[in-house]
Length: 386
Image (tube, rainbow, N blue to C red):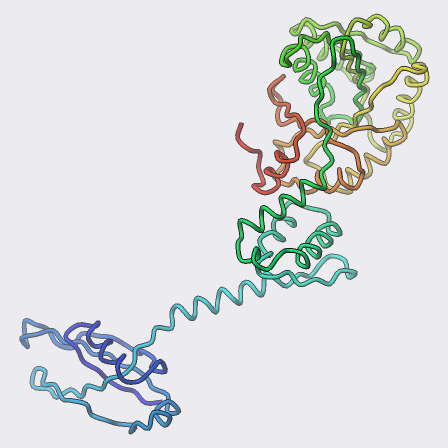
């Protein structure tokens, strides 16, 4: 490798001179000012480059060729013309490529899966992981998308995100809210573990149906929760403020009587005692209440918190399935940044989602279930602004 030196009145001129001669194999080693206008009459800059010998042989250049001599402050400088080549852009490009390759190497938790994520899908895959999306479903979705997504779309990150939004929209089961006709009646029983927010959700929903829909529906509430300290008082406080009737039931045979007393209500919401998903005796007690209702139709909604892992959701669902779950309601969406577990859980259980609870405010922090809302939570990892 030969070291060549060039001069110019400005760094740009020196580099431009270098560019005319040696092609793209010259490497800039240094650029410095060697003469000052005040002392020698003009500024002068020196550029030193290194030139590969292979390039010189190819160009049939002599290893040392003097182009011209310039007198600077009584010192003769030899100016060679060489090509300036800035490697910065190339190095950055190489670093980016290496980073993308590293990101695209997927080491899945299960050895059953063997999938290399294309560079275009790395950000989406990372989003699935950060949202704690089910691993098996992630693999299936990405594999099909890699195979089916048109090549023309793969170069556009926005279109890739839109494509995945479309896929997610198709796999989220949603039960759309359909207000009752004037003479219709609907009874909904809410079940689930202790502390998931059943009572607060019922209060929000009761307020919504009584005051926020186009029609003024009559709403009544029944509580079966005589185990938890303060449970009845909490509901009584809500119903007093909202001027709604409250029935307290302590025995299975009393439930039918309470429903009869609320016969004029369009909506009747039943609050049940929360328990651990492993306390099967309390869960079976819910079925005892149902046996006294004969042919009265009751929807059972399982209330689940958004801030627990997939395996816990599955355990809760398995235990409460014995009461005959119809729908799901998710609470505490404001207490998590991971929403993939909700999507994959709803899809696996094939149970439609009815509502999202996104805070403690009654009745405002209740969202009618919508796939687009949940997808926005998933994509941005936080609740959309309302």
